[in-house]
Length: 263
Image (cartoon, rainbow, N blue to C red; front, side, top):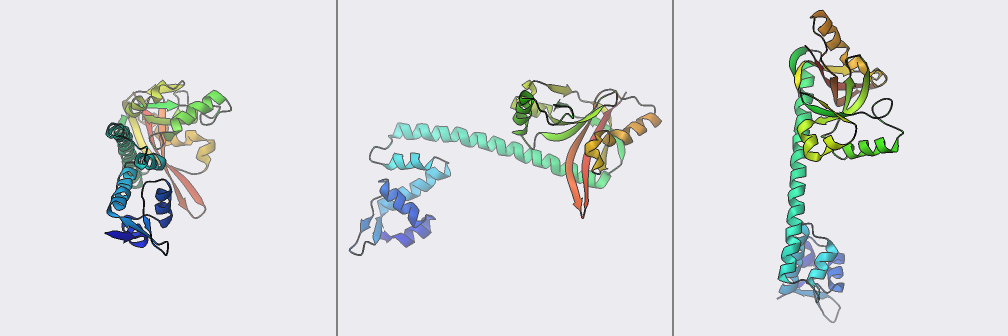
């Protein structure tokens, strides 16, 4: 039984150009009739389905072509290639699992913010690592510090745009990440990172206008006033995490989740 190029291309989801490529590479050997119309044998079709199988494993195209060439791979070599692809697939699965967890965190906390803007309660500030660089804590002119930030930003959205407020009232933008995730990714070892311990804290969600970027301390003012009225004292650096930016007409408001450690 032989099959014409259109039927093969449509069934296997391959372009005629791809079929011509595999013919040139010696993967398949279609027969050409008097009118140069190509027909494909069952062996050709099975090889092309096998190509789809290996591509689904994300093997490189040229490597697959070599595998089916006259000087292709033996069984043991193929098994070794599959083992490498298995490791890559497992790593990809772990990466996507972490991505799903990070997206879920943002979705959950953004929804909570939409329902509780301005409300103040006592909660536990999560253990986090923060990274500050440059004069504003965010971007530096120093090449080494730029490299540190770049290393952190490889792991967005686990890394979060944040604000840090010290006990003396100094506030700067920064980057933060959950402590367990930082240790797993090795970001805790990046020079300049600081650990913020888990602790009791005043907690709220804040809506900040554009002035926040020039005065990040604005994010903490409501909690600081509340602490003063209720005779609490700040017990360590306060943290604000940017959840999203609301856009309505010409308005741009940053939504933050904010913690102020207390004693």
